[in-house]
Length: 210
Image 1 (cartoon, rainbow, N blue to C red):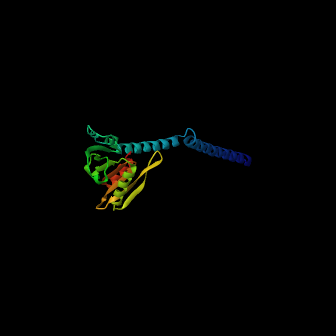
Image 2 (cartoon, one colour; image 1 turned 120 degrees about the vertical axis):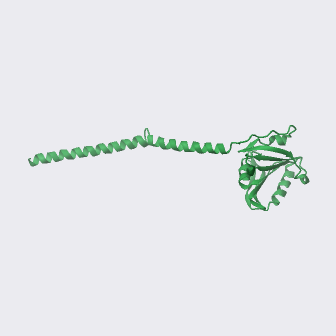
Image 3 (cartoon, rainbow, N blue to C red; image 1 turned 90 degrees about the vertical axis):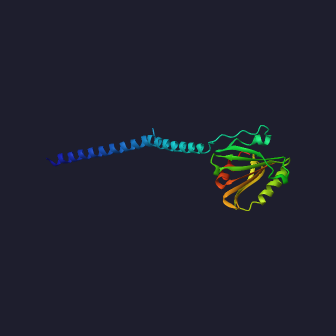
């Protein structure tokens, strides 16, 4: 074969190789474009997986906040304060409601003790709620209760309604049992105290609507 033919064949071979390489590059670019730009099947798949994971986590959270037992009816002669107490708080349901006199020395207009339960006794919390004629009286009782909390302070802050401060709250470990906790807060003319295990108290008071 002449030198001219050999050169021509070599050039032709080079063109074929170059053409194959260019075709492969175009194919790779096409695949990448369709995967991540349009129609974005790879991105869509990742987004779908993320969305599915998010939906699963949301569902689990909702299930954890769904009460497993029904709330008990209020007494037939329930006061407006008792009626304002929520049937459920997160996964807790209202159970026994009793008139009590724990804070009689502070002269509240009324006082009630309410048990909220998830259905597991060890997770029960006890709520004491009382109301005074004036917010100053409620604040005095709140201050008195807080001064008696000698366990480690876990949280404190202001109670806000529509952006306005209407009271304050503090959460402490139980001085006699650091696995338990006490949350006390004042909201205008009412004072609340919740006791139970530390995890239960934290979960409960943060979700309580009043």
